[in-house]
Image 1 (cartoon, each protein chain N blue to C red):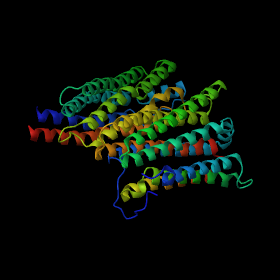
Image 2 (spheres, chains in turn purple, blue, yellow):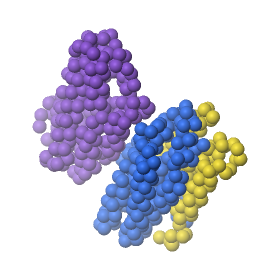
Image 3 (cartoon, rainbow over the protein chains, first blue to last red):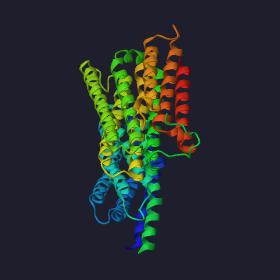
Length: 230
Length: 191
Length: 91
């Protein structure tokens, strides 16, 4: 096992979190979220006001999302050590995590389509804007499955020196539960369960980005321990 | 009485890690409660009027089931600690029966509300009513799975580890109970 | 294990049921006459006393390490106080 490459994949999550936040916040101004009740004209005005900053922000968000694939691979390698081989949970995590990366990249492309011709009919810009928000915040399913797989693998680790402490398993299960309310954004345009609400946007966003940082620390420890044991 | 020794050394119920989940979940529900209360305070009349359409009997009945199942689980832990695996399993079955009754009552309550035309999108009160009770119901179903797991784990020879598992699962179930106690007050009883 | 009826948890369960009935009556309009705000406050306080009873004796936090007991009791006090402050500010 090449520890240097493994560490590279682990650290890529930090780069992802930093770049994604820069793209989302100061560049694209997608933090705080657009209001789901805003009129087509208001949304179109947002895209017309600062088109190239928005395009650049989305470029950065899309561009750094591929790093998630590298990080998913690092989790996969750690889980292989937990399951003593390519177990089903490891493979579930790998495929769910990969799908999750897609749902970071595609919404950025949809928003890019809106920012590409900001002068087009506001109704169409509104449609693309809706599509982007729904794609980024509604598909909880891949993240939930990924977190449950990690949680179960950590808790099922029967090795003499476990890969990760057991609380990490419970933390992953908790994160899984936390993402589920996001799926309900389809019913609401106002309030805490709308896509700009506290239980769909703010808490999941902070937990999502924070989860990477916690996992970086633990994966790094595991990789170094495995290198010493080898 | 089981608390005869006030000076016995501290004992953490269950394993340490499970408290990350329990405290995390309690934090999330605390946020639900506080957000509910702040939105309610902006339009008290709407919330009070909508609340009058709820059937308090369903809520109270479910509180009874939830408290009773929690009590059964506490008795199962006592029995497990005394080394009476079979009796612990019986109490767990009692807890599961109460949990199933809870789910059944919720099913009737939801269908009654939906038949009367109240849904997730009727107004803000019903948004909270369905979302919060729905997310709680998800925890009840999760907890039912945990109780089943405990029932099976009690078939193994008793050990310190199996006792810890029983306590971990029991603590999760008591948390589901606590969250319902607060939800019942907030959704059914406030004026 | 002594008989079920001699166990502390059983008496606690009975007290919890009684507390539920009492708060249910407050919810109906009994209690503090016309002052519905006091009734509501009583409902909230009873709910969190019930939660604390479950925490201390069903979860067995009474004998848990101090840090955990502090966090759970802190939860009940902080959430109850926040809810009551929001309620009284708008009422």
